Amino acid sequence: MHLAPYIETLLEEKHYIILPGFGAFEPGQYLGISINENGDLLPPKRAVSFNPHLSNDDSVLASVIAAKELISVNEVKDKLKTVVFQWKSTLNSKGVLVVEGIGKFEKSNGIIRLVTEPSELKIGSFGLPAVAPPTRKEKIEVKEIEPVKEDVSLEPAKMPSSKKPKTKAEAVQDTVSGEATASSFAYQLAVVLLVLATLSVGYFFYSQLKGVDLSTLL
Image (cartoon, rainbow, N blue to C red; front, side):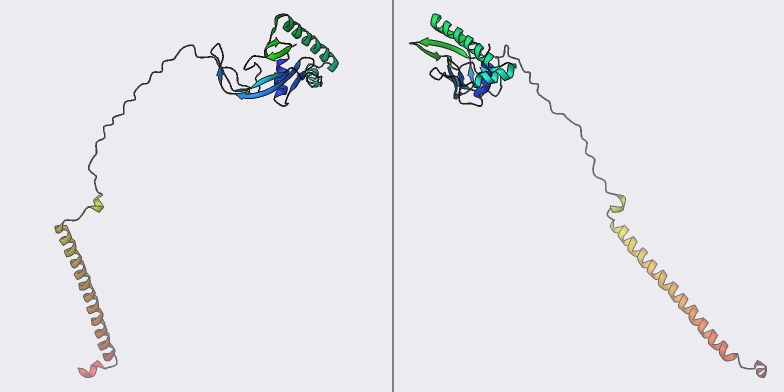
């Protein structure tokens, strides 16, 4: 039975997880980024400590495994007893036990200790995997970008014809033309006034002579 995933998940929420008859796993201090013996870059995580004196059965681990594998809690407890018996037998005979996903245990003076630092349990690693070192260095070629040269020919600005400054001669000519126009207008006005005056005088004499018998004058 592979217990590491269950212990890892439960330690994210609980202060300890008991493996009945063996001991309890507890979250330890946070560890920064590290490099293992293979040169892999390990993400930050939380170390796991082991307490061999806390081994009473609280049924937490068995209940989680039973719900995940859809079997009874009693059946899980029987499997856990078998696992613990095998682990203790190995420690009693060899003094060392390596559990995949958990770490390395040693038994000395009748006390079991988790000696792998940091252990293989990824508590608080945010799900980040180990990153292998690069196998080769890629040469990055940097090409210099030449500035773009543009042939820009600047032509002298041309002012609109309507905005050209007038010469002195043109200004004098415009003044004379203005004066001639004013004189022409005054002359035409005088002629009109003279015609009106002539018509008025003629009408006056006509009205005076209208009632006179001209035959008496002959």
